[in-house]
Amino acid sequence: MSIVMDGEALSLKIQEELKLRLKNCMIRPSVAVIQVGNDPASDSYIKRKEKACNSVGIYFRHYKFDEDTPELTIINKIKELNNDEYVNGILVQLPLPARYNEKRILNSISNSKDVDGLTDINTGRMINGRKTLVPCTPLGVMRILKEYEIPLEGKHVVIVGRSKLVGRPLSTLMLAENATVTICHSKTVDLKSFTTQADVLVCAVGIPKLITEDMVKEGAVVIDVGINRVDNKLCGDVDFEKVSKKASHITPVPKGMGPMTVAMLLENIVTCYENKPATK
Ligand code: NDP
Image 1 (cartoon, rainbow, N blue to C red):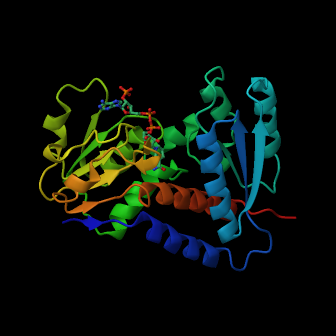
Image 2 (image 1 turned 90 degrees about the vertical axis):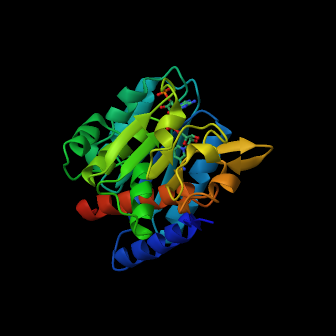
């Protein structure tokens, strides 16, 4: 039976650390969240972020735009927030409705306030090994592996999913730790031939039970980033019940990478604030 890596407990521990970091601050840090449209999943993610921000003392501003709002109106709001010295972090809740140019909107966020680490400049900095703001879910994966003292150097890390939000940035972070990295995606032929080689297997796809017991090496560490809803219950991409009998460590869904992602968002906001506190 594997060790279940408790993302919720670690998230709460990180929140306590952040409260200490903010203890002597005169002005509270603040984050602005831009939402476009009425996606119920986005509503619930935003509520979770707001609750976590409130718990550590981060002021939360929520700007919600109708789905027919002109793109320029959204970009102008972001520019206004870029120039607002009381706003330390800005994030755009993804996905945006299809008609918007996501890249253009994300790139209008000031690099120093880009708490999701998604501007082209911050992505380039990360790839070049420079200190920068890094996307929250990959950061959360690295943090939970560190907490459970999982060695990465020389290990074979197989990442299933190559999105800009998770798989791609995670591969860069893993390379920086001297892991050997394989990235799989929807066009990968014979996924199992790769996943069974993994010392550390990360799945970020969005297909329930994509990863079954026979696809995992005995003693592997398994990180399940996926969030799916089946019969009104949350589950990941990994068949937890069966894979947990074979893996050495595994993250659950819920209470795994979801809370870790929120914790890393809070950490990025506090980092932005410490780099550029409000002066008045
Ligand atoms: P995307 O849809 O952007 O990316 C999914 C990736 O999975 C793509 O690279 C796609 O390949 C790949 N893929 C699709 N089908 C298969 C398949 N059959 N075999 C192998 N690879 C496949 O999703 P995200 O990265 O944004 O999110 C992935 C999952 O993680 C979702 O369930 C999402 O809800 C969850 N998530 C959870 C977070 C958390 O906080 N825990 C945060 C962010 C996401 P291709 O590139 O070829 O299309």
